[in-house]
Length: 432
Image (cartoon, rainbow, N blue to C red; front, top):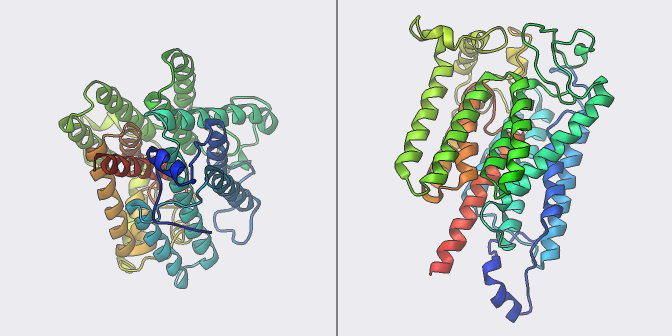
């Protein structure tokens, strides 16, 4: 496989044709199929296994199978364009590759080295898929907003398919954790009649919220006609409401507010700075809500398995971090430490603590470099998809592992930053 550090963007098509090396645009429908495969890879289509169970699982086979299927399709599309090459020197790809290398090296001292290597490889595959999609979009000379449209339609198609699949899985299209007639033990969930939450396939409500939030953000930022947005948006928002995910709700609200303002004042760096500041403030409130004044605290309190018990989890996580601050416990090995004290905690429920716990200060330093790159690209490109996904992930990442965790949100923010990087580079080269 040729991994070239030299891309011939679509705006050079005339030059390429003169040299007999034309780059053909990829169809939106084909790209939707590959993107749908990536999205489905992170949706549990089979019942989950115990958190500490090792070895090969059916879910793992499906997950890697769908990712490899997407990579295969994207490779075919690149070849069909006429040049199977992409820019591996993209800063975001290099940073994620560095983290993947370090995470797989941590298998030496990990409590489950096979899981550590597998998840490190999976994260690298996610970054590679995002790079290939961004390359295809750039070479196809897509208009602004078309990638968001294709991604939104892919997510909506998956969501629609999962609703239909729920009839097979659960006997009804919109099951919830408040339905006593359902075998919730398959999910490892308990009956919560006071707080019913939407189930899609065998996915946790918080992951379902991420799926719906990404679809809403992409749809809002897309170039789809307003009539279609008016039809699709209320349905997605209603489904999102059924997940009852409070951190995700805060993230989505700020993300949509920022996108709405961005449409009105595209070149306002002050607006972006203000929304980023608001995001960090909300993220801080989620972390330190137990220290808020008595008059404010009731507005943000939460119940078991959410913020109140997470603060106890975070305190215990810091204890484990202090025991191994430099190297960490091994990528994806946090469950073997935390589940001894918290039966429901397969991870630290915070992106920064999770990275620090599993990959140490070295991994946390790489994560900080990645976030600095994202913030830089947000201000220099003002790309709508990047702004929306970044603000959402910053807030949701405070209560769940988002960054450097192979999943839909990580794929979305990686694709967004790589897309923004490549578009900026191609525009700069045109000006020259």
